[in-house]
Length: 133
Image: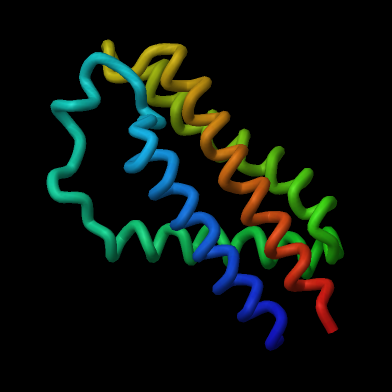
């Protein structure tokens, strides 16, 4: 139980920190398209972003600890990469498919890649934390 709580905490920090680095410092936007500027929230609501990252980290921790028995950084990173790519691409594909000019295919690819990177690092950390005695 203690390892699960630490895994969620460390995963949340990794996801939030990498999200800040990728989306704010480097300036990449997961929903890269012509209409994004018109719908982006100003200012960004950090409370809901932190809640989202906690939920993502909890989801990964549950998958790793209950069903996959992942307890190493390498396996956690590999699995996190796959989970992140899916979680990034699926909503982007839905928005791309159901809206006019909100995002383009570059936004779909960017969403998949940025989520994959964030979830690979966080998944590795979560796997490592779960493997600690």
